[in-house]
Image 1 (tube, rainbow, N blue to C red):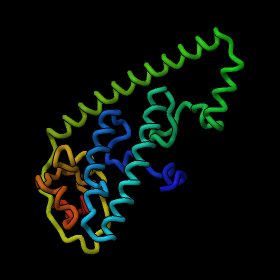
Image 2 (image 1 turned 90 degrees about the vertical axis):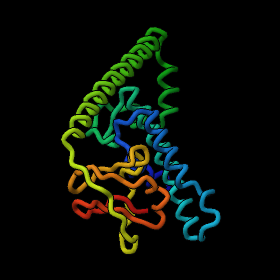
Image 3 (image 1 turned 90 degrees about the horizontal axis):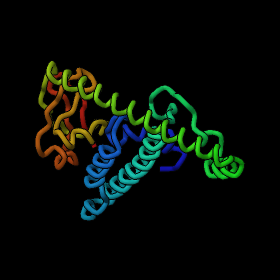
Length: 215
């Protein structure tokens, strides 16, 4: 994946997590997917399968790197359209080279200005952390309430022939064996061995027939 393409994708979607994910949750989702798609697991498979695994692993690595960069910017109080939040305070990296900007600014600022900058940066990080914590608690309450009233269905296995690839939500499903259908919004229970069968089987929602997972 090129650097230009990496900046066009949504790395959180590639990893199957929300943009409000914590650093720990992001790493856990990445490691789960990396373990599944690591090329070493496919050494005995066909060349086509090996190339697909290598490409998928490269995409996961780029997405993880980009997602961590965005989480770091968010925790410093900077938000932009790439975070999916509709924009916000612009960071100095958007004006040009980060290193050059930083070196020039620090040569010209006084000790008092430097102290004020550091204090402001820490305050912004604390505000961002409090905002993220509040939003995380709110989302957790919403998820709990939604699950109380949620309808459930079972995943139905299907032949992969003719179906497009779709792994959205696979990261979360790897932890819970459940995935929400994006069409009818029911919570779909996946079989315990769905990850091992994903090479040969696709899964659809038994409630509406929408495609859930296919590699």
